[in-house]
Length: 418
Image (cartoon, rainbow, N blue to C red; front, side, top):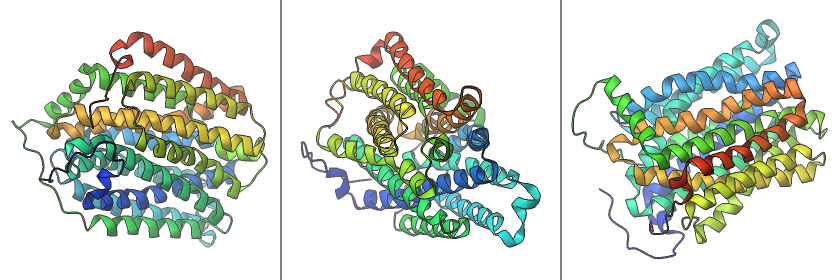
């Protein structure tokens, strides 16, 4: 049982005084660098061989389908098996998958020459399964590390560290890809290994006591019903789902860098890092002025602003303006991430966190990948720039529609959570 920390009002660093939470976000930091690097490496590698926007979109679909298939089961596992053990095993398989990508990328083996990019898509599918287990176990494990009164503060710092890693990972990958894909994957493996090393110093936590035994089917059904009967959770997840589905321009960045901005892999790395940089800047503001007062209103405003920034990015043909608009998308998105995560943590019973996290992952995690596929199809049909503008417009329309049909979410106030 974690010792309760004295309630220090307006102290933005309270969660960082929990030693195991610092180790937890260190684990998350190194793992996120690795995953973000992989996104840039794989995207640039496939685009280099295909020069096709739809091929970029297929990366998202290849990862999303197995992710969705496994997510509910992984949530059940996270409520019945040590969450630390799940993260360790998943990290081991992520290293194996990255070694496979490294093997494919070695020119002397001629794998891509003989089989095209199909082996890369297959491995990405395997990584989708791994990510399903990560998603269900990470947030559930974090809730066992920090006291309940620090959930909002820990969510802010967890998001901040994730976004800092999301700056470093893509930027580093852009530079290293300019050397070779092989070196990039080797560095990727080093960061996964560092995350495992950090995790080893966190004690395993006992699973929350379950009041009654349930079959797998009953267990999954309870988790789904809990989410769909809670208007706050369902509204927040649905809003983010459709906003990310239509508003995500990140999947098309390799093509955008090449065809619109006329830059290479190094600049692509900075473009991929820009949203995370904006998110970190916003996280610093949030740490001192949490968006919990009038949280519902702040949620709708931030996602609407995300859509507007996406439109501006779609219009821009200047590299530096494009960087700035991408920074804005990350800044506004981070507000919604913190609010949504806080709602989930405060509304979910301890013995259901794995299953609810899994449902959250289906809504949010898979929407990034499916959104990438949607962006690829839209780019093929409409053209690259119009497809991005269309996505931003759809995001704003969805915000307006959700505000009308979810009044409880619109009036949400979390000012008393600290």
